[in-house]
Amino acid sequence: MSGVLGFVEHGPAGPERLSLEMLTVAAGDDGVEAVVVGQPGAGTSEQLCAFGVDRLHVIDHDLVGDYAPEAWAEGLRQLIATRDPEVVLAGGGEHGNEVMAHVAARLDEPLATNCVVLTPEGTGTDGWHLTRLRWGGILYEDAVLTSDRKLATIAPHVVEPVPSRAAAQVPVEAFAAELDPVLARTRVRDRTTRSAGVSLATAPVVVSGGRGVGSAEGFAVLEELAELVGGAVGCSRVVTNNGWRPHSDQVGQTGTRVAPDLYVACGISGATQHWVGCMNAKAILAINTDPEAPMVTRADYAVIGDVHEVLPALVEEVRSR
Ligand code: FAD
Image (cartoon, rainbow, N blue to C red; front, side):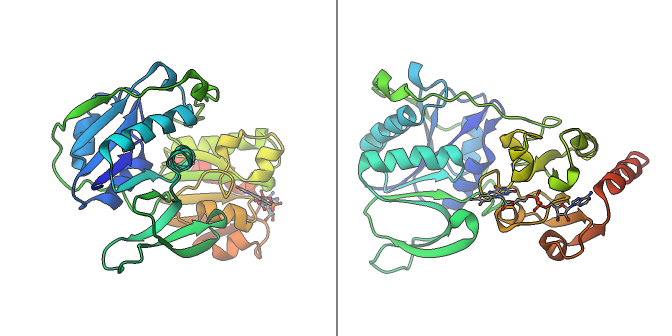
């Protein structure tokens, strides 16, 4: 048992940011191999090489075209049985955590999800010491992973994805997994709502609205601002509960975690469940009528006022520049 296997999620634009963050955490380890499910786009092998990957495995099969967590996990399990890596890592997004949970169950081995610190070296013989997010990110938990094989996912935005070496072609090998059709009984087609071509999870600016926006129509001005600054629109759970925006826009414990350069919180109170989704933003601007709202007291900048007045003025100002 040796080496690291990273489960890399990918789309038309190449590897997902979460996967590159995971590989950045693994950088420096010897013998890093990666696995993708479905044919990777052009340039993926070179890009992964820059992030420390020496060999890329491709699981391609009729059953894995759509997201089918059980089929993907069984493919991974078979690859793990063949390559016998000591460490298996994935990004701690929805798919990474779900697939790895199935992998762990199939291997009958423990899984540590949403790790923010992994200290494999110098931790004695009792195993890997790690810190992971619990309760949707409200709590940090120190734990020790004592199994021989270490299965873990890396919480989003723990590190900036940084290449560790020059890009070059690495060996790409097809892995012929044997999959039973029953494994694909749950298949999910991805539906990602994007604003101005920018995804919520990776947008440099997120313009987010809460109950204070007042209606679905009220989000038009947030969309306008987001488009002007190359950002994405987010929202609170009250907004998705009211049907003003789709769940894919929700930021928070049960939504997306974001870490933009700027998070603009419009009419959002800043409940803990929302805060854990945006607290990694480099700067927060709160627009709220209540100067005591938690979002206002924690924000780097605040405008105390009605979003229906402040946002149109902000849009006008940005347009004029
Ligand atoms: P409110 O708390 O009602 O706040 C509205 C804010 O708007 C207030 O601060 C008010 O002063 C301000 N305001 C009102 N009118 C205006 C105006 N005209 N101009 C400016 N400001 C104005 N919530 C999430 O967001 N994401 C999650 O992932 C999430 N997960 C949850 C999971 C669980 C298990 C539970 C129990 C709750 C979860 N919640 C989540 C809900 C969360 O607890 C809050 O209820 C929610 O975040 C509140 O949304 P809000 O800030 O839009 O509304």
